[in-house]
Every structure is written in C-alpha cells, then in structure tokens.
Length: 251
Image 1 (cartoon, one colour):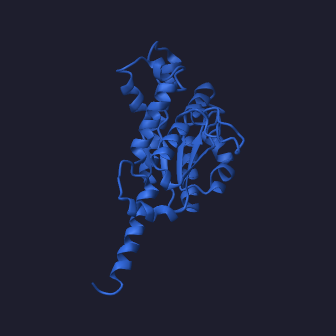
Image 2: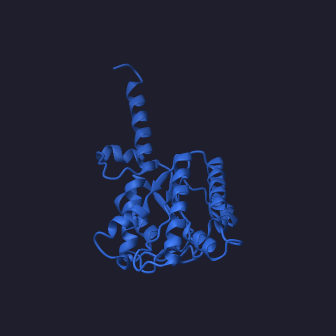
Image 3: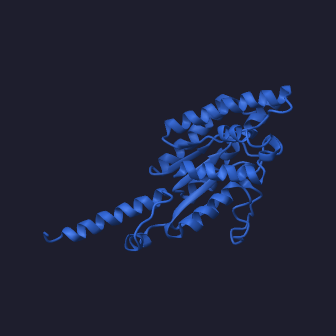
C-alpha cells in the first residue's frame, strides 16, 4: 500500500458519514468504528415555521424544554429523530405562531428564521391565508400574493444559506361531511394553494410533504373528525400521521 493511502481513505470515510448524518437517512446501520467518526460533526438546526398547526401551543420560554416544541407534529418529529439518532446532534426549533398567514411569516422572517441560521427549514402555512381571502377579498391574502410572498421568503432563505434544506408542507383541510358552500369554497381555495406549494417545492428543489393526500387516504380508515376535529386542526391521531409523513419524505 502506498504511503498516504490509509489517511485518504479515512478522510473520505469521515466525509461520507458526515453527509449521511446531515441528511438524516433513517434505518441505516453503521459499524461502531464508523459511527465514532461522526462524533465531531456540527449541530444541525432543524427549524419548524408556520401557523397554529405547527405552533401546537408551544411554550415561549427557551429554558422550558418540556414545552418548547408544543404538542403537535413538530414535537413528535423532534422526539422521534432525537431518540433514534442521538449521535447526529439535531437541534430542533419551533417558531410557529397561531393564526399566521404567509404575510405574517414575512414580517418576522429575519428574527424567526434568518437570525436562527437553520440547516433544515420546514414550512407549513396556507389555511389562514385561505380563510382570510374567503372572508374578505379586499384584505385577504390572494393566491397571487400567497405565491409571490412565499417565493420571496424561499429566495431570501436560500440566498442567506445556499445549502439550506427546505421541507414544504402542503396546506390541507377536510371539508367533506356535511358539505356546504363555505367548506366547498375552502376546499377549492386550499387546493389551489397546495398546487402553489408543490410548484415552489419543484422550483427550489425542496422536499414536498403531501399532507392533503395523506388525510384523504386516512378517511378510508376513520371519519374526518378522527383525524381533524374542526376541518383545520389535527387531532392527536392526525398529528401522528403528519409526523410519519414528514419523516418519510425527509429521509
């Protein structure tokens, strides 16, 4: 073996393990010696951003680690990945705010996203934008404004952090039974916003999490209120579905 060959292999192996750790490929098993090589990797900041579905009644005190992630899918994801991959040094942050629209996210983007320097940014927003538009088209967030503002936030984020990994959650609703005009209109508008998010995911090479398709399929097993109790907010079972879907696509 030529002089210097062994160190080169070790450097290559170290780089490979770091990449695997960063992108969180679940279910991969490494020998103990290889796992030890990832011990010096940097912390990976995973930031959840959005409205009440992400907020999950989270605590606002950073020192209160018992409540900081809320009680929804963001908390579930953090718990699962933290337990399954303690060696990867994931650091989870939840900055979802109940009632927020895409325009509200824009107002606090610097403080609640860019200043936190995320490595992974997960966004779920759209249902409040939809309701604001259906309530008042003069002051609500139109589809055009939703798309333009969303795209601008993604551009800002990628410009600040070129290697940022984006996870875009699909807005969703279950206005099936009983049917009425408002619920039908909401379903159509949310569907249009979902298409926008999917388009942006392709445009920015982001992970797209198809929550609407997931909930539609779940109706084959149990009725609407088993998963989403008020057509908008998931139940405990609904949040667990979201957790599994998020992790599946993140991997």
